Amino acid sequence: MESLRERRTMGGKKSGSHSCELVNVTYSKESESPVTSFTMSDQNYRNLDESESADHESKPDVSDANMQPIIEGEPFTSYFDEKIPIPEDEVHSWFSFRKLWAFTGPGFLMSIAYLDPGNIESDLQSGSVADFKLLWVLLTATIIGLLLQRLAARLGVVTGLHLAEMCNRQYPKVPRIILWLMVEMAIIGSDMQEVIGSAIAINLLSVGIIPLWGGVLITIVDTFFFLFLDKYGLRKLEAFFGVLITIMAITFGYEYVRVGPDQGKLLKGMFFPYCEGCGTPQLEQAVGIVGAVIMPHNMYLHSALVKSREINRSNKKEVKEANKYFFIESTIALFVSFLINVFVVAVFAEAFYGKTNEEVHMQCFNRTSGGQSDLFPNNTDPLKVDIYKGGVVLGCYFGPAALYIWAVGILAAGQSSTMTGTYSGQFVMEGFLNLKWSRFARVILTRSIAITPTLLVAIFQDVEHLTGMNDFLNVLQSLQLPFALIPVLTFTSLRPVMSDFANGLGWKIAGGVLILIVCSINMYFVVVYVSSLGHVAFYVGAAILSVAYLCFVGYLTWQCLVALGLKFLECGQTLSLQIATVDSYNLGLTTFPELFLLNNMDNEDRPSSR
Image 1 (cartoon, rainbow, N blue to C red):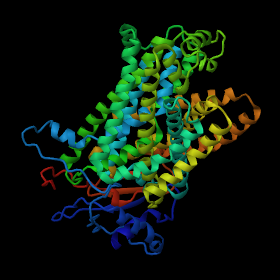
Image 2 (image 1 turned 180 degrees about the vertical axis):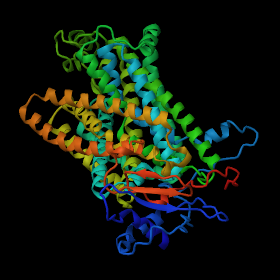
Image 3 (image 1 turned 90 degrees about the horizontal axis):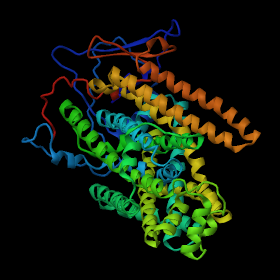
Image 4 (image 1 turned 180 degrees about the horizontal axis):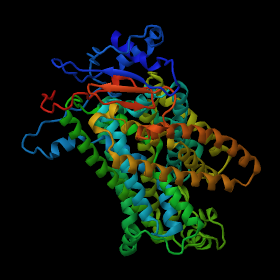
């Protein structure tokens, strides 16, 4: 451990020459003793972090050719108390359903972010505003999300570190703290949407007896229920999430069957990228779909969840196998979430596209004896719906059963995304700050922050303002998207970190283009939202904040471009590492030798630990 601490401090060794001169650190392997791959525990890392400041004064000679990054330590530990073993299957070497079942879980937990109340509201608004014409946007956004989630999962599988831990160890202190704050804002924003969704569902199920503020307070119970459920083991917890996804599929599937959408129009809207007769409302809705589907904190979540499987990271075959099965599982999970989203879009496209407030007002007046008709003005403006009004309008047209089943689906969406959001918060806090909080304390903190503004709006305003908060929260999360996508592309493109599993040229180009497109779309969404505020003070404030925001995004982009291979952008002190070969990798980041877990993966015949 002492020799490793000495090596870690070499990243800070100053060069006495030009500011862009590289500091060369060489690791060679002796002919009779090959470098062995290694793992480190989180406790080892904490020990390193705690003693780092005391080691700055002792800097070894960087020309020492006998240094070898060999670390003995316990395997990486995940946030979970247990790891799921992967069974051997000698009969089916290429594909095994037994192995797929063992790897099943993290992808479905990740997919819940695609089914949270914010996504459901985006779906129903898409159907009511643009008919079936934006289904291809939903499909494209889901595919892009899958490809980006693949990068996050590979990072966790290959390195044994999730994205927050990697950011903590690779970025300097100030960028690291800013990143943590931005991601925490995204998690809190997502948690607020889940609180809103759950409160609305409780209000609908109680026929208005429980007010919205009461529903907000009830969500505090989620904390204790979650902590109670977590004691029963990881597989049971994953099974519970599977039950919640099944409830959403059944409830929204019922609405789909009840309404009976035109299948021809549905397929045409899904596979033909067109939007005939679309204007500004449809364009803004398309942008909103992309912003709702791709969530920043989900990248951090998925990279951590894959650590729950027992994988020998010194065995290239096992790592490659894990990457394959996790990608298959993620594909299946996102396909299921896509179908559920399609159910919601299709229901509102078929039943309510082109409807006016006057039509819905009269229908609700006749069906409910005027009880809920006041939600819809008696005018000829196009119908505008949200999660709450969506349930009401379904009840007006298709009976009380449709309303209550809709509310059950929304409640399942809110509860499931609450739990995965709690995991995201725990991973991010522990990874960025090396801070170990109990789950109880973590949930109480984030839920309190999320509940306070939501509760104030629920008490002093009406449901219109409560659901209207979703637009602001979607903007907030859109702003945080670069702080997840850029780091994950950066780290997965670094060969010294990912070894043979680093992104190839195709993935580097495709990943860069996809992230540029997604971030540009989300920035457009932010600009449209700020423009709609209609006050010069908001414009001035947004302009000032945008300067600082763009500067930090530019910094992350610069680091990412260096990692992608644009070495001419390197300037200042960088680190060139030569690990067991004569090749050098010039990095624009602070690179720690203990992250190189797969140095000798050329030996694929190494016995597995399983």
